[in-house]
Amino acid sequence: MGADEYQPPATDIITLTRHVLQEGFQRQKKGAASGDLTILLSSLQTTCKFIESNVRKASLINLIGAAGNQNVQGEDQKKLDVLSNEIMINALKASGKVAVLVSEEDDEAIIVGERQPGTTFETEKGKYCVVFDPLDGSSNIDAGVNIGTIFGIYTVRDGSKGEVADVLRPGSEMVAAGYCMYGSSANLVLTTGNGVNGYTLDNAIGEFILTHPNITLPNRGKIYSINEGNSAYYHEPVLKYLESIKYPAEGSGKKPYSARYIGSMVADVHRTLLYGGIFGYPDDKKSKKGKLRLLYEAFPMAFLTEQAGGVATTGKGRILDVQPESIHERCPVFLGSKDDVNDLLKFYQ
Image (cartoon, rainbow, N blue to C red; front, top):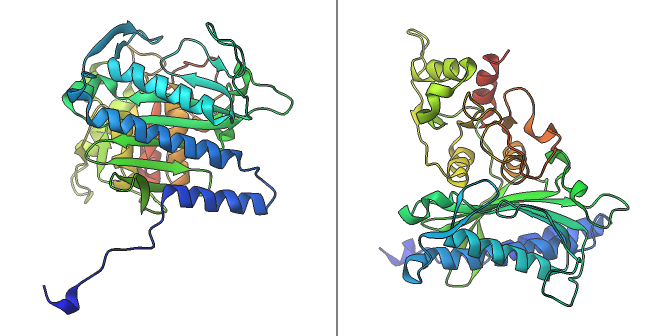
């Protein structure tokens, strides 16, 4: 390579810390923020770095395998499930900005500020509620498949000191949502209601760097992501839609869609956000309410999808408009490119 072809590395990089601080400053200028959300998001990114570090060396430090317990969903907990949950809870409490925490791994919501068993102190209470799946796709851990952390953030209701009712609200009331995917690289994707941005962890400097600014879904993709192993249980609208994209009518000029299904929601949604297409986990004759959890899986991913210009639906209505009745409620999920999801909805009419 000649000297005139040399391209020096970028030096004016935008880190997640810088981006979050800039957004927080703009909210403060408008009188719409106190800086608490900025602190909370900074705490969440530190949490993701901690979890990523343990995921990366899990096989070396005996974190592979089952922990010998089951969570509230009746699923066998992995060692990394348990550790990731503890990391999330302790870090979020330590931020001093949360009032309620809801985790996939815990039966009940954690009301921050209440004296915990075996302690003699109360944790400082904030004004935010965080709902999260500390390690989505954990059944794939031992195989080295991409897994991740999903989270959504609410503010407590006016006059509330922090209670379960503060999170039993539609996803449209969330103020921020995101996920961090752990794989060949650690990718954190975040929205605070002003579009979607993606960051990649640079382990050399310990910072998430903005690598995917303003993620926007194409109107139509070429990929469908659904577990066709369950197709024997699917209802007619889903079966007819799948047939239409796998076997387009002759003379229509359409090509069959490609199937891509990893079995880790974070990984499948991440690909869908970047490449377009549709991701689905429907209700069926076996799982009558679907499998994915509304609060800490469907809501955050639907928020991100809509902010990226896509559509997220249960098949009968907008996911973000669903009123939760319990913290571990399940719901059907279809999300992705506008045209693809709207094509599916035609079969539900």
